[in-house]
Length: 298
Image: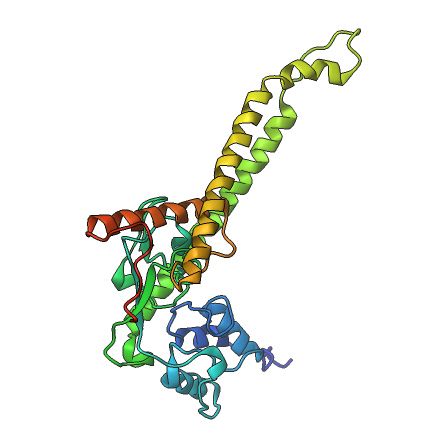
């Protein structure tokens, strides 16, 4: 009898890394989405699957393209200009005099490099910032500037493997935290619905056959709350009207914040407060009048 021998395709696995894993290891982990994907890992998976090219990562620059080409056994090609240009690494800087504490930048940061609280000034933890730019667009008062901090060094010359590894870890931790928060919120919603369904119903006499009659007394106290809500909406609408008028005046003079076309009522009210703060700062510095100061273009 011939001795048993394993089939040729049966091998001992000594390295569990997939091609996507190896590609991800070569990416700078800025999580900037300039490649067209929602983070470095999705982009790595797309390159491994052949649905994305290996020249779509501006933070990695020319050296990043060369790294991926070497791994994939393909020629070195130029960075795709559609995805952006190689540049010195920037650092996000928040103007504390203009920040309104809307938290939109904190929600956009992929590595939790921004700290602060609602309606309080936010700040960027410089060593954690990857220069991804994602916090700039959501800011309704344009108080975030991206300042180059690498003295002309670009791509991997402006970014170390240690920084990439740390950014990757923070990004993974953020994703895990967000997943836990979603699960907790869903659990609370399920528990709330279950509690509503399980709530005991008040006993009804046989003579009470119309559900509307039994519920009318309990609905009556809701009227004051409705009036208060309507008053609140009116106040917010008035603030919005003032803010929009102010914005039109500023835009006509070439001034004012940008990114304010599609914001919620609460954020727009905060923008109005920021404009009032601007006026107070001008008065404190000795400037006269309520009109915005003109840029030095004369």
